[in-house]
Amino acid sequence: MEVREAGLYCVPADAYIDPITDAVPRAIITHGHADHARAGHGHVWATPETIAIMKTRYYLKEETGETPLTYGQRHDLGNGVTLWFASAGHILGSAQAVLEYQGKRVVAAGDFKRHPDPTCAPFEVVPCDVFITEATFALPVFQHPPLETEVQKLLRSMETLPHRTHIVGVYALGKCQRVMKTLRLAGYEHPFYLHGALKRLTELYESYGQDFGAWEMVSEIPRKDKHVFQGKIVLCPPAQINDRWSRRFEDPLPTVASGWMQIRARARQKRAEMALVVSDHADWGDLIRTCKETKAPDVWITHGRVEALEYALNKEGINAKGLNLIGLEEEGGA
Image 1 (cartoon, rainbow, N blue to C red):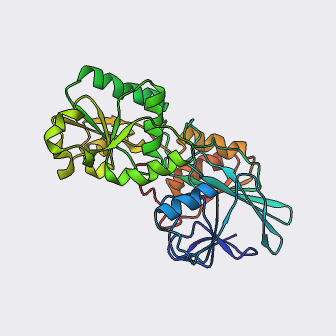
Image 2: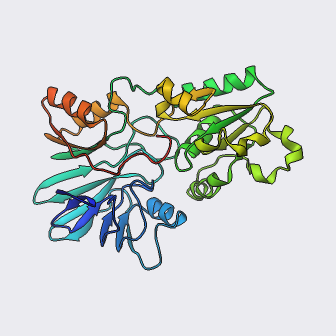
């Protein structure tokens, strides 16, 4: 494995993993977020769900070759390299890329989380020789609460303030659907109202069997009927909770769901009246735990709070080093 300008490169397979700066001839894609998946590659290896997401977001053109691999399906990349995917628990179709060559195994985790998520397969620990991990929330301050706890906070607010419209800022891919599903499991029965940017990916999740109950587009409700939104949940991208779009609602309560909401300054920056700590990444404890559970003697850290995780793992006797890949940052609410 090498670090090149375009990103992490497997030499014998002549393939990049989540190339970040340029389109490449051969790309292994761990999931569909834009900081990992992009348009223009010659050939893509990914899970069927990730390929569907890339097509929905116009990242795959007709001329792009594609090889969909389900979890655990082994594939010969050539020159003795075998590729298979293990679930990463990040979003629908997210995967760890497992590369085996000459008796050694490298696992590139992409983005992952260990907390339960009713909208995607859970993270699978894969023993390996080298584990390549993210470090988005690699500081001891980040200890993410269960999503159910944050959802109950939202529901209590709605009971206390039934006249207000709770506008929840969520990233369109993964966060939106996870929050919707968890609210349903918590007993929320009213229709959801969605910003237009959330529509296509929510429909894609439904095509894979997810049931979110009734939801409608905000744009389909006449402006004169804005009372419809009172006491209900409106979902939109985080940037829209306080812009002109949100002015159509009476007495809105701007809310952001993100792992960064654990930092008060971030909540103030987003002008969020209520902050929900909802992350689709591993927190500090789960990062350490996962690196240990893989039993990998070597851990490479791609992006995030690299130095803190590198120091903590070295103290545990694990040979950790930061790769400092530029360009891999969470495109959404984390």
